[in-house]
Length: 180
Image 1 (spheres, helix red, strand yellow):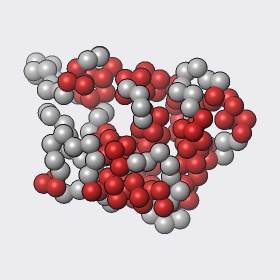
Image 2 (cartoon, helix red, strand yellow):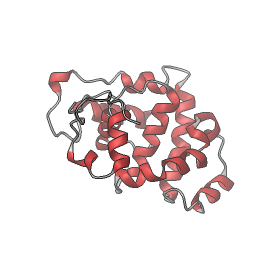
Image 3 (cartoon, one colour):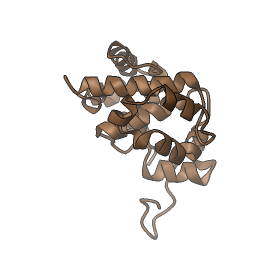
Image 4 (cartoon, helix red, strand yellow):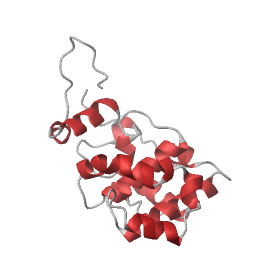
């Protein structure tokens, strides 16, 4: 379902978003629209980490299985995962079965819960919103994504490098990279 109204021209999309109907729908209805709640930001950080080294289309196709496997990306539930859950996830053919990324997601859930004592995950991430004129077209990282990466690592997160955080910033609307 698209945000496009009947009779409107087809939205302008970047090449990556035109290669598959699932990517078109993602671009038209999710990518770049603000995500400001803890669970939503945690899910996107988790999926961006799993995407590292893979195509985003692979992750989108597996997203329903990821949501089921990771308790809807409820940080409290994922923070309580045990070694039995690691084994369960390593045997789940519906997700990317990378032990380091699975453990990182669990670690990031615990760090998300801990952040509630101070600022909260969504508020922390959104505090790194760059000035629009500071962004370079086609950039894959920014000063702000590098700073966000460092702050998240200080807070106990992993798989949150500057390029991954820039992709997150674009995906959740912190950086406006939309063409339409």
